[in-house]
Length: 186
Image 1: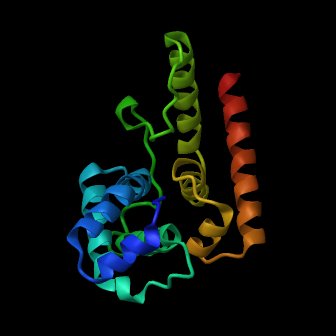
Image 2 (image 1 turned 90 degrees about the vertical axis):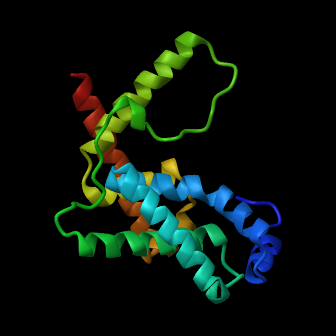
């Protein structure tokens, strides 16, 4: 996500506040979106995001530079989310609900017409309403892959599952999503 990420991380290890701020700015939104998509509560998502950065900076000396930082921070976030659910057993994993103010952050499409913008918004609405109907484990996969834009290798490391299993689950999630979308058009 960041240019010169290794250099920034090394500066963070030396206590450079500016480097820490750069790291937070780069990863705050994706980590917040990850928590929000799974918990659907802005305050809790903000708290968990802050907690993750505290955890990152207090454990940065344990970070292995041979791995991508994004994989490491999402793995920490995933484990933290699991811990959160263990503490709050009444909350179901990856609960999604839809409202217009909570559509995920998709890459901006510049220079599109108002008509195309409306069509795109309608498509997003349909897709996210269908995502709500997916089983919980599929919702997390869809979030990691398509909202956070992580690669299969990164997701495999984060969730600690074999690549073949991951690809199979994502395939089934997409297949189920297509079925739900087709049924909603009837």
